Image 1 (spheres, rainbow, N blue to C red):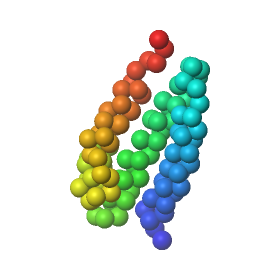
Image 2 (image 1 turned 135 degrees about the vertical axis):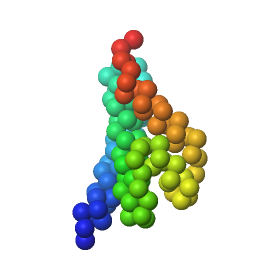
Image 3 (image 1 turned 180 degrees about the vertical axis):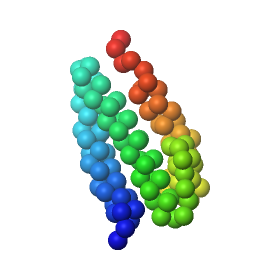
Image 4 (image 1 turned 90 degrees about the vertical axis):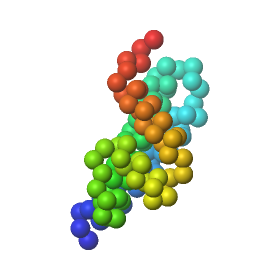
Length: 104
């Protein structure tokens, strides 16, 4: 088994853990600004790992992608995700939150 073969498996395992942690953060009260910040950070990590996991799986399919947007679009074309606009919107949100100062 090559490194590329195991990379996607590791990504899927990590993705499952990240989704659980994001769900935990979102279940908390939004009144606590630390929890809001933690939720945003977990969202960013989750979206980042999703597109990278797609990129690994696409490489196994023989399709090379070079950006998060390309990876999500290719995943949509292959039927791995259903709502391309929602995924691209989440990617846009991730970009906004990771480049914006969250102090209000």
